[in-house]
Image (cartoon, rainbow, N blue to C red; front, side, top):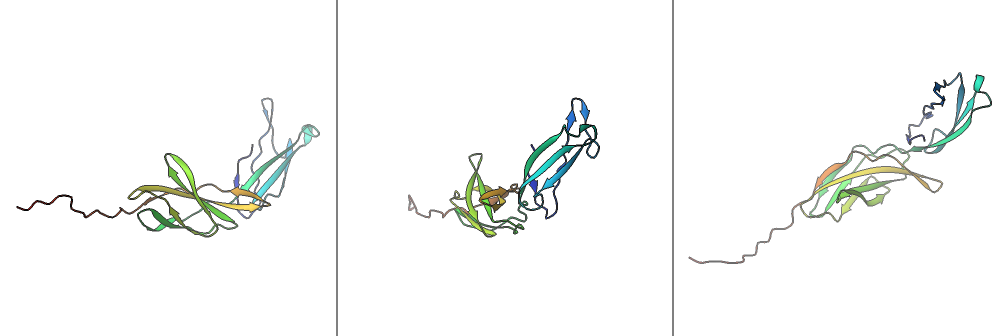
Length: 171
């Protein structure tokens, strides 16, 4: 399979490698490739057709996804004892953003947002939290999700200090 490709605004033509037994085929000599729908975010197709001595023997078709670019410049703008406000740069062509937090060793969805700001709630008081984001683009009802960015570490504020005196001794 061809892995997801990141949107660039230009034609995306992932390399195709073919072999026949131990013989490595050469593009332009043994086969040619034709790409379709390979500029915009969505599903693209590559057709591989035999030429030369492989004419009539090779006729393959594979698809791959073009996904949104990776979110950049994510930052925490403020925290409370149980939440964090984060912002990031907009990704060209993104419909929305998926924010995740690492809980008990697993990335868990904290919400889906259409803008470039979010408040992540439900964090433990005075805790260290790892947050990352992926942009997605919806095309004909299907979400094409880009790679998650490098996480940021967010520390929530400590809770209120209990100033109640439990015992007082007068000397």
